[in-house]
Image (cartoon, rainbow, N blue to C red; front, side, top):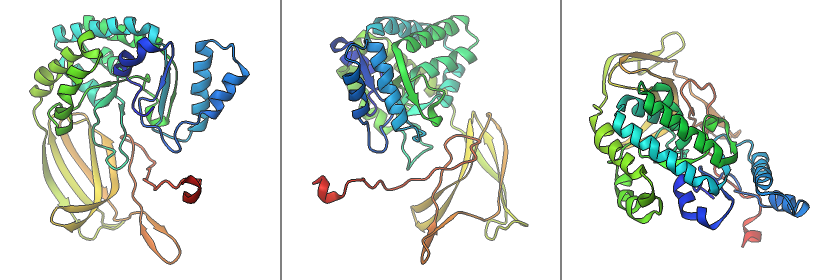
Length: 335
């Protein structure tokens, strides 16, 4: 069910089923355990679809309650016509209103899916549709756009019967949609024709019109950020008493700043250990960060190595780290 909890997939499969269960995000750990869901169905053969949907989502919530990035939901496909109409109304209002600032702000703050633990700060191609509309409704100055955005939020909430969300996805409504942050990126460019021509949704929805507006009228009008280092102090030998300091000026609409600790291993090769900081920003400004030279180390008694850690959201105090997953079942038994 990885990355299949999207509106595009509801168009593909909605006519085939009365209940659609999927994850807008990647399934983590050992994946989706069917046993609790089948046990509920066996004990409650007469359960209605909504009761079954809520039981399935609750079972996965219990199974993956430690996965901060999880997102899993059950959907009612019979509500797709209502959602489709709300989405088209939103697109029409946005294109006519042309509130570029609200769209850019919403895209920069919305929950993204297809999380990549090795590149946690890289924008992805999938966003939470309902939360995006929420953000637009909260920031736009156009009353027609706000009304259409709120109508879309309501339609998303009604099609989502139940959802399981990790702490990093708490603001999400649980339904994804394709919206590349940079439509001209290599991956977005490679997917563009397939998205417009192969999907059932493309000719039946105005979202294709929105994506063209997003690329041609919104993203193309954004000026690149200008970043200029204004001062550096003690970068070679930082300490508690005499920390390293770097100051830089940002010219443009920045929404976050972050610094990473890395070791130069070659001309174009960096070994990145993780975030020194990840903080919110509000457009132009002067920023300064101090570092005392300390980093985390993991020891195994006779050996040690640097810890690799990243913050999830600006202002976080806790880091997370990648780990190699080892299956519980020995390889021989798996074969």
